[in-house]
Image (cartoon, rainbow over all chains, first blue to last red):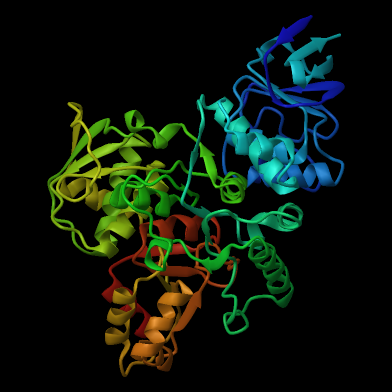
Length: 129
Length: 390
């Protein structure tokens, strides 16, 4: 299945999808050392986002979150790609400074955790294998 | 987005790596928020200065930008995690200090004026009416938009830095007049006096209207210090980036039909919410940074007295230099109270060092509780000093 959205930051990547219906706060909500979601009661609390195609509706919380994505990238623990329903400034800036391929305006409900997903961010295309 | 020749060159790398990365950030934000073009800014205020927030990766990013990035407009910084000169006296860990200094060095290399303050408008970064700017710190954004009538969105650290390195920001949100109209009228039916009262009022309004732009009536000629406290509190509790006050603020707006009232019971309820049951071992004044007028008042109150608790007066370094000249600093320091320049008790890493904070700042209460895990007492400047000497 092919979904088409909007490029946030260019690049191509593929990997296993990790999907949540809840917004993510990277500052405070994700451990920058282990890449584990630590926000209490979050739908994917305890799961590691490293190497995944991370699918969530949008970012939330402090703008310092952009730097958390950058830290994850520098330590090799960033998601390989990010897919949002509606990207906002924190995640957008985080993806640009960390050079993580990223697409928004995608109906993330169509993607299931564990799906193999290909992201062609330049063209805004997400392919579920 | 429609880009000028210069903007296109920045984007394709002609003007270096830092300008390219910055323009990528700005164009992407512009596309997300539907901006048609960039607007030139005259002033920038960058947040994300405390090493406690940035960490090693944030510092690495700044160092990378500092390799070839130079600011194109007047740019100052938000408070850092420590007093850049007097950190030892304030008990800051030397390892932290070393890292904080590396952060400041990176900013300095880019040509940023390293006054670290949430009141840039008091120390030479004063935007004018209708001027487009790119500021970060929430209270300063609210003050610049509302009291000065400048135009800024609330920027994150990297997007403000991008504006500094390119001299531009995407034209959306509060840069457009149609988004600066009041959405709700707020009639104040109670007497409000002093920075602590204005802070409480900010909490009442912020808690109930969120980030809707208010048109506020019934407030009589507030002082600079009261407006500074009010903007800080309403931005903290409501996320407000712009407000209008009848007869006080310069922006034109329609007066919205939807209205709410603030009466004494609401103020009393908020005041109760701003106070914990606690004993005080720490007194913090200067959130936002104390003005020279406030420092003068503190010196009068402390003259000839000794403090029995840790007392910090947070301010911008140039403001303290005025206090030095006037002898206020000598009077205040003779009492045992300390100045904390370039930083404040909300961003400095103080968790575990103190238990109960007394402050006249409603914003200080929020961050004292949240970041540093203090219990708090919210009271007037005079009561804070009385508490300090008790």
